[in-house]
Image 1 (cartoon, rainbow, N blue to C red):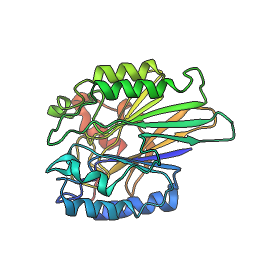
Image 2 (image 1 turned 60 degrees about the vertical axis):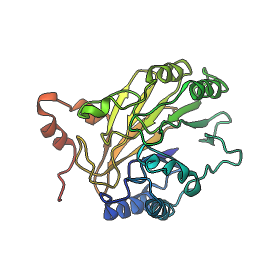
Image 3 (image 1 turned 135 degrees about the vertical axis):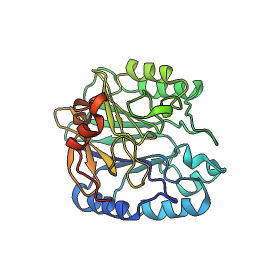
Length: 278
């Protein structure tokens, strides 16, 4: 099963139309994913014409299962009143839980639970006590011992800080510790985040946390290319996460981490990533 995660389009003044057009071509013609997760910050300012533009761009993606949720930029300027108008929850029961079959096994499932972290006109994220209790209840509905059931939690803000992001380490999720505990206690396999524009992967042994870069804007941080993530859930129940440069190479996201050197991080990053032509 293949999941593509795109994030932080920032449709507005720093949006790169050519990059998004290339991304659409790659996804529709080459990757053909089973699920697409759009993990927030579709717009830069949360205003009407940006949402209209974002809706047109997302409609270009050919996939039966597209999961979209907001980021902090989408909740600016009363964008929180507009988001659901342009991106209503597709589930008939208006739930933030999505269940997909994979492979040939009867119990081979992928469960994606989306968690809202954006708050109106705030950069920092919050899950909140009630939503964390909800997440715990949802995850416990699935057998923790069944390795054929893969649990994915998706959110916009970062759950754990990563390098090269400065002050944005402060404006993550205010109750991140509670959410992290909920995920670990319920054997979540993968958490996907956006927000930081810095591709990264934390491997906590039983759980991975994958961060997506910006897919189509000039808001780079650490990696100076437009990127998105490709998640492959294999028949042997392993999960691989690759980084895909828009119009460029595909590499394991773990290589970004393995080649990171604090004293020489720009050089090491360029060893992994192709040089920009801009």
